[in-house]
Image: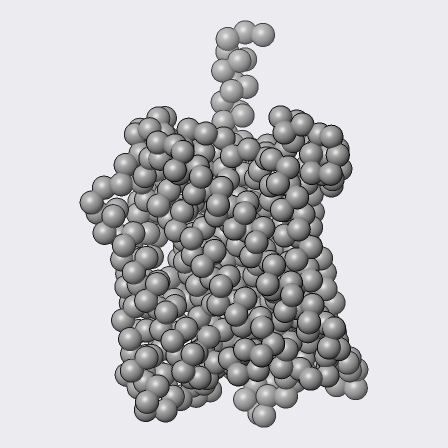
Length: 495
C-alpha cells in the first residue's frame, strides 16, 4: 500500500468519525438549547405561582405540560447521546441509526408542541388514561391524539437507537450476559476480561429502557385508539400501571445513561481507569432489576392496588439507592481522594451530577414510604426530589459532557492541562447555588404541604414561589452561558 493510499484511508476514517461526532454535537446543542427554553417555561410557572405575573390557568397547564414533556424528553435525549457516543468508542455503531433517532425525536417534538400550543392540550406529560379524552372542552380529541403520537414517534426513535446498541454489544461481548459482565459477577471471569464500565452501564440501560418503551408504546396506542374510537376502552388501573412503569423507567434511564460520561471521562482527570469489578457488575444487574420493579411507589395513592405491590414499591425504594451509592458515588470519592484530580468545568459538573443524583435519592426514598406518601405525594416534595436528581444530576452531567466535548485543544491533547479558571468557578457556583436553592424551596414547600400542579397559589405560599424564581433565574443564567460557550467551542473546532 502506498503512502498516498494510507493517507486516503486515514482521511476517510477521520471523515467518518467526524460525521458521527457531528451528529452527537448537534444533538447536544439541541438538547442544551431546549433545556434553556424549558427552564424559562418553568420560571414562568413559578412567577405565576408567586403572584409576580398573571397568566390564564389553562395556559399555565399547557406550559406545565410542555415543561414536563420537554425536560423529560431532553434529559433522555442527552443521556442517550452520551450512551451512543461512548458505546461507539468500544463497538462501531451505524451512524444512520442515530440520525434516524434524532429525526424521529424532532418529529415527535413538532407533534407535541403543535398539540399543546395550537390544539390547547394541557393534560400533563404523564398522559394519564382516560384523562386525555376528558378535557372538559379545553382541547379536542385530535389534539390529545397528536400529543400521544408525538410520544410514539420519540419512542420509536429511542427503540431504534437501543436496538442498534444492543445488537453490537451482544455481538462484541458474546451475548447479553457478557456485556453485563455476568461471567465476572457470577462465575469465574477475570476483571481484566470484563467489558469496560461504560459498556456494562450501556447494556443495562438499554435492557430496561427497551422494556419500558415497549410497555409505554402499548398504552400509548391503546389511548390513541380510545380517542379515535371512544367505545374502545382498557382497564384504567392497568393503564396507569403501564404509564408509570414506562415513565419511571424512561426518566431513570436518562440518568443511568448520563452517568456513562462519568465512567468514561473522569479517569482522564484522575489518571486511573474506572475498573469493572465483581461488585460493580453485580450492582448494575441489581440496578436493572430495581429500576424495573420500583415503579409501584408512584401508585401508593391508589387504594385499588394490591397491597403486596405497594409494599414491594416501598421496600425496593429503600434499597434502590444502595447500588448507586456503592458503584458510582463511593467509587468516585475513592478515585478523587486517591488521585491527583484535575479540575475544570467539565469534571466539576460531572462530579456535581453524581452528588446531585445521590442526594436526590434521599427525598425520593422518603416519599416512597407509604405512611409519608399518604400526606406528601401530592405536595411540592415530589417535584423537589425529581428536580434534585435531574437538575443537579443528569442535567449537570449533560453540560459536563458538553464542556468536555469542546474543551480547549491543549486539554484534549494533555488532560493534565485542564484547569478551573476564575470565570469557570463563578459559572459553576452560579449553577450549583441556583440549582440547590431551587430544589430546597420545593422540598421546604412540600414539607409545609404546599400542593403541586396548582396554577394559583394562596397568599401564604407565594413567598416560596418568589424565592424559587430567584434561584431559577440563576440557573437559567448559568445554563445560557453553558450553551453559548458550547456553541463557541463548536465554531472554534470547525475553524
